[in-house]
Amino acid sequence: MQKNIKHIAKAPIGIFDSGLGGLSICKEIMKLLPNESIIYLADSLNAPYGEKTKDEIIQLSIKNTELLLSLNCKAIVVACNTATTNSIATLRKQFDVPFIGIEPAIKPAALQTKTRKIGVLATEGTLKSELFLSTSEQFRDRIELIEVKGENLVRFIEIGDIKKTKPLLKKYLSPMVEAGVDSIVLGCTHYPFLIPLIKEIIPENILIIDSGEAVAKQTEVILRAENLLNKEVTQKKNVFYTNNDVHVFKSFLKYINIRDDNALYKKF
Image 1 (cartoon, rainbow, N blue to C red):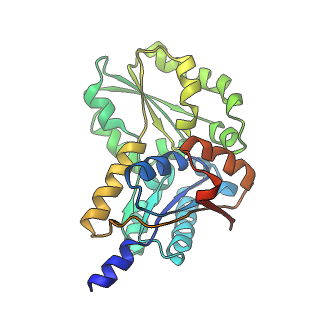
Image 2 (tube, rainbow, N blue to C red):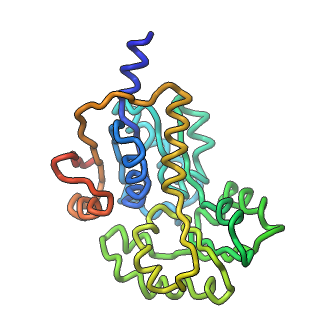
């Protein structure tokens, strides 16, 4: 039995997103858990998930999970706010494997706000989801949420044209700044790639909050609880799958400090 546990612990962590955004989560997991191997799945051809129906999101999430499990992943990180909020309950019922999800970090923002006004920049699919509504409802008696749909931001990120998002960001962030928010929650894993541009637009005193570090810590907690942490230093290659342009995908890896000699890239 002990051999089986060790063998499973050496299996990779599977991560999927509607494209490049989950790399911001992948970066934090790799930093916190350097012994772990990663298989990352970028479903870029179906991005953005935030514009799809709940049923479409669930079906895509099931398909992604099945592929990662066929590659012997020991746990699945749903590195997409929209996929988490719309499908993770279904995934947990259907598959016997640990799932780690992600949702906008409203709670930490609510606990530290001074103005009691918080901005939330997210996709339509996240903002309309039952999970987001139930989470935000817990804090509405003490804070005001200024929710803005980040329309087309994901599309520009997916084609590697981040600079073209700046006019849109100015439009989306202005109502938050005018309302007097002291923090802005990034409710999409694609959005951390926009942080340098966001900082050029908003006042310095406004805190930008994303969920990457929290998801990495939760991944460690779950793996430890399931006796799935890989405690041995092993030679490994992280594998990145995409169904879109591999060159655009590889250009984003500079953000998470992955060198070509330490990764494999495959189409699916």
